Image (cartoon, rainbow, N blue to C red; front, side):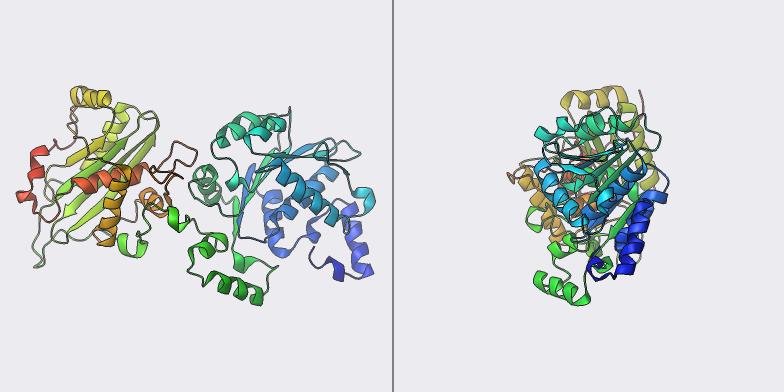
Length: 460
């Protein structure tokens, strides 16, 4: 579309012929066509576009919606933005731009009061917003396509309600229904779309990701100027906004000192400086939400290196006591062979009634962690990171992700929940383990041994 004004009469006529035949792809830029092709030829009913600024994603989805409406009479499509006011402002302006490209007889009527575009064939493109006060107006009996633009900026607190109670039911009886998400990077990777949808779409090959260097609308000189404005490509805001990395705003990060190059690596050998084998003390941290998330961190204190080594992790949502205990037993058995390790010391945060049940019915003799204020607990973790006393196995991908992106709530006294029940449980379990380590002591000198639990949990 950017080069439309340079088209000669012949090229314009060829474009008009394609448009009359219901083919709109040619008016998109090459990088925009990649997403168009994914949606229109890919398998499945859920697709995503995760892109840097100035991609032209809103124009892309409007072009896709108009092509579908022209070719499929009587259909209903919805385009949702974070707010309804924003949706009307952006898409009515884009609609006016398309008047220079699309023949008048193919253009729908733009009804601003009704927030929609209506075709003579009965097809409708309806605009809506994701703010709580806008959501109910997006209800309807049926929708053939739903586009969620800037979805990673949707209201986090009502995200799941809006999706599962209002939007998705409209596609239940539509065989070819598609949910199409587009977004630029959010302020926090804790947003529900990032936590719930991004990874799924990526793993299925249903997501396209474009950085500033993939944008055909930007010249090398323009990119260079943007990089200079941010002070270089290592700037955290540039990495988020233009390289599409999942990073949080630096001033909100719980653990800004975390560095994968320093704190992630393969576990070291269990030996001293002379190569002699050593026996180490496992310290397991657990945060059992039970009604939401439960997390277990399997690590040990390597007293020769003066480091806490994380070997493994386990997490689950809405799990029973039996599942949680089985996960603990499996983690102990897999990571701490008795020939190399002492009996594990487990510190676990859980409701007192649940702790009583786990002790008496399951024989799990964990102890309560030293908690204190949240900021004090996080500062302990940050001190460990600064002093390079933590090493995490690369297979602990969820813990690593939490250390990279977990942020403070606005009051700076609590951890941000991101609008979901997933709120850095692994990072918290790690903190409990770190505070339980007897730093600077050999296991044989450690007063912590009096808290030894049995190796694994024996069912009673």
